Length: 174
Image (cartoon, rainbow, N blue to C red; front, side, top):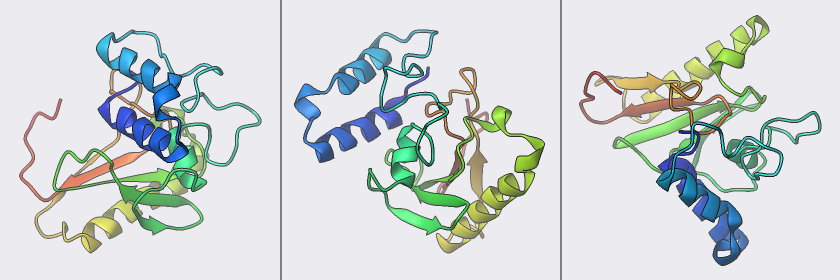
């Protein structure tokens, strides 16, 4: 699925803040996607804000919901921020502690990262470790997940790392 419950919650929160919830075609499209999944991405075309694919004139952070969080157009509980990345609490936590680490630079997914992105990718993992420690997860452990593409259930096409902990995780995860 291109859209999941987390993305729907971000959409609802955004629409509430913008005062457009009742007339939101984005919300209707998001609900339709969840109820009637399609193998084709419903939110990757230029006419499907706020989940559009990256274009040449896209703003900082891309045209995804994470780009809007980077630009502070949508609020988030920010845990860490520097010139390369942002870490914030997940709006739909799947564990007692669940946060995301995203690059400021738009990269649609881990498969789209190039060799030149290796230092940035290492920095994202280092920040994930640092924030996990700050959240008290270091001693008991935690899970780090990167979903990629349709089969990996990537819901927002902006590279992001999930960090989850605070409870015993199960295996296999999917």
